[in-house]
Length: 354
Ligand code: SF4
Ligand code: SF4
Image (cartoon, rainbow, N blue to C red):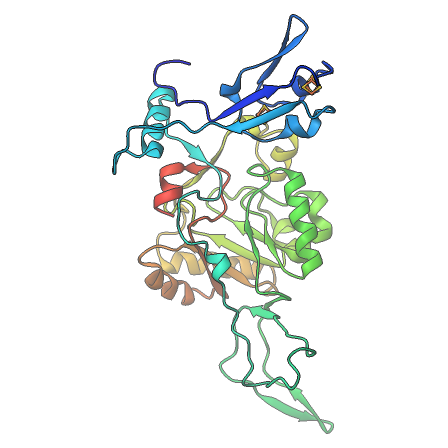
């Protein structure tokens, strides 16, 4: 332990009576906690993040991991989290980056969702047996609908603009290939196809293994324009322009070059090993008129067959921005709140701004 390090969080122990020295824990711990010395397994608990991979791989249930809380002198302002954040920043000389989610004790909004069922327009006779429909449409609705009579049949005269049809009013937000692994994206894709809903590609392009799920994918166009070409736009069920992101409003993105392997580089259409930097603003959008041009260009490119959404972060002036977006010909405004998806965001932003 060096001066300024935060205390270790977990204590790893190995029951040497049960251990058969197979070495699987050494091979499988991604943080190098285990080593073999003098024909015995030794541990460095400081590196452990409690991922439980070693426990899953140990054939003898010989590994035990316990949380190791360490008390700090209590203070209403200098909480343990604040102190550890300062230690970590001072030690590394960098701001702390973190992935999606938020460990701060805010309400879990998802657990408090109330679905607004239409019991008045279609009163249930036997609510225990009648199916409840959650189908939801996202996109523009006409202000009035006109019908006409053709050969005695009543047919719809109004041309409807394309909408997304969700079997359940839940969608999976955008997380790019690169920010998350292809396995994770494929798992989400299978889930949205199975449940009749949609997920977002993020700003990482669309990997060809996801083409079978393209009818359930919303393709994203963000400030770096990574992975965007006509093939990408045409494959998506809808197109989303990302202006802002709930996890880090006002901040762009940075996928380090180490994560841009051959496969990610093909999908993002950038050189292998190069940093993928998404600027904070779109450098061609500085007004609602500019946004309107992009919305209309994307609609033109996709022959007006795909709805185009615009995503912003949920911030204090979202209502004014949303009013502008509504005038830009976009089909829906997506408002991304805190705990939104991100591969990496400054932790202080993720926890206190998003
Ligand atoms: S829990 Fe994860 S990090 Fe900790 S020792 Fe096991 S494999 Fe390594
Ligand atoms: S995986 Fe389990 S049995 Fe194998 S060396 Fe590690 S602790 Fe021992």
